Length: 151
Image (spheres, rainbow, N blue to C red):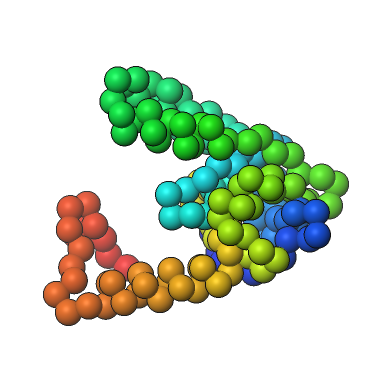
């Protein structure tokens, strides 16, 4: 299970050292390859390849005549890039993906269970403020599957 929030830095070549805790979690999952793609929130998603393959099968199975399905396929599959960690636990974040997520030097690596999210640090903090405000507004309540959530 990939969890936790870590501050990290991209080096001059665009390499990211996967935080040690996440490296250990990936090792426990016997993961040697990763797949990175974009997210509609303008962050990057980093999946163990086995997890990504299941998502990829679902995306490919979407109806090809559905315009929204095709758009999602183009965005997620089109940007999907297979990556390997080097001997130091670093991955090279492709320039096109860095540009999409507006990644500069300081980034946040956010564990999300089956995947990691990679955010520009400033954008992460701005998004957190927005989410906190959204959920703190008077009258805001959870609906659907979230109603039964107990923390």
